[in-house]
Length: 375
Image (cartoon, rainbow, N blue to C red):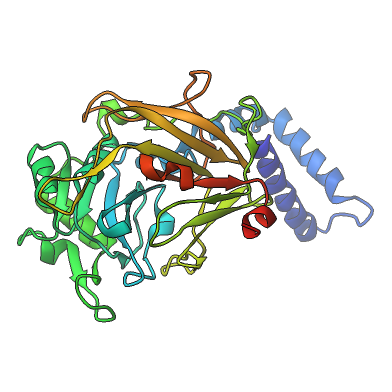
């Protein structure tokens, strides 16, 4: 129907132009002229609205990350994933609004870092900043068959990278660093390492990495609803606000019913992307409760992504309890409603939050913003 309306509007606009140019009688309306032109075209065999509509629908392609319309080439393109710092020293962040999916995961010292996944990373001169790898981030990057950008790594992260589970562009690689990364002058190291569209493309070419997504991932990681998922069938409860336990950035989200999106806040203010100046928003929020511990002999956090656990799924101002499972490092994580069906996201951006089991009780949803602000 949408394509038909667009097409009809185009013909109506053309008709108005012809009406003016040809000096059509004033008493003839634009609608009359439009109908006449349609009838003449059909009689001459030069117009088949149904056929045109079908052809236009066949030309629609959808992002594997967001299920929003994209150019066909993006549905075949291998995504990239970037480690992005999330501290006050790193703000503002650059390019995060072009990410289709973002994972927020705890790191050592109570901070979080982002793993931002992009299928379209075109047109950006500055992305990041970029920080070092931890094992669980590399495993998540592998779930999407992505090319993983990071600037250094922990000892444990190096072990995962050495396994070959994911192709990476490492800022500590002397051959890659000057091609892919640059240092800005407005921040001190290590908070000033960035990449760009050209840098990423040059790095992929230098490494000779495959650029098309493999067959195992060509259907995408998540399932998307064919129609709007209001969580009504799952008896979702009102959730205008989600507050997370992360002690450093203290993030929370507020739902905008008109936009049908959650706006993200952190460090006491809205989070914005320095590239476009827009607030960070998401259509879907996932909380994944995970076991965690400190790696013996170090201060690094260890998060086990294999096995199963619980969580929450928020979309369209509603929340439901979910479960998750992952069979091995080489599998992808699946999320399920309480009835056992796999969850279905609404088209748009998704933020996934790894929540340590010990902090799960401190992640709360509120039916209204007033309820949140009164606590």
